[in-house]
Length: 219
Image 1 (cartoon, rainbow, N blue to C red):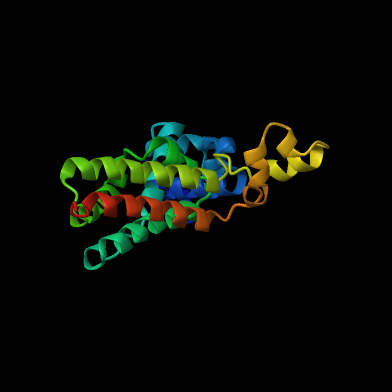
Image 2: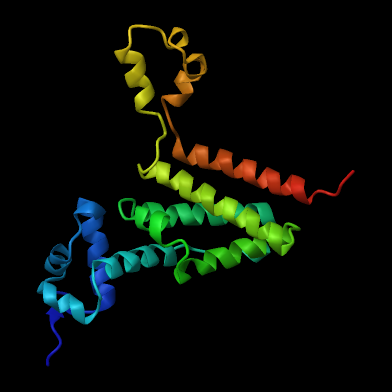
């Protein structure tokens, strides 16, 4: 049987995944369907099944594609703290290239084989920092949890409070400080804005400082 052609040539798994990412970025992952992917590729929906199992297979492949876009430079030539910063922002850059699809990585594929290069690189960096394997694994998990949490907030999956604080202040006649939230009132100006890159840098420096303290010789 002749292979069905798309507008870009023979249909392939890669073509399907790329068209799925395009649709998701334009309409949102929640509105993604095999019918829409097929339409974007210029084929009938049934043609997709020669290359994919089902929609879940496509979603996993989309997440793997994003993970593989993490650019890991020559981290072994850098001081360990600089290398850890580079890995963190390489992860962020890959996720933000596909912000509407990034939740697939953050929620379902961090344990996938496509994520192993990042794990390998981070563990090498942490070993160079002076951590033994057990401690390096603990820090790696903290590092991954920090990245997932930070990026979840940046792509809108987790709260930043930047939107709700001005709304609360505006909608309530009573002052926050007298409404049982004095700490919120004191930090309202800071809570009302969120510079995602600055927040990531701040949290990353806390993590790096924790590693540095753990590896310092006891006095």
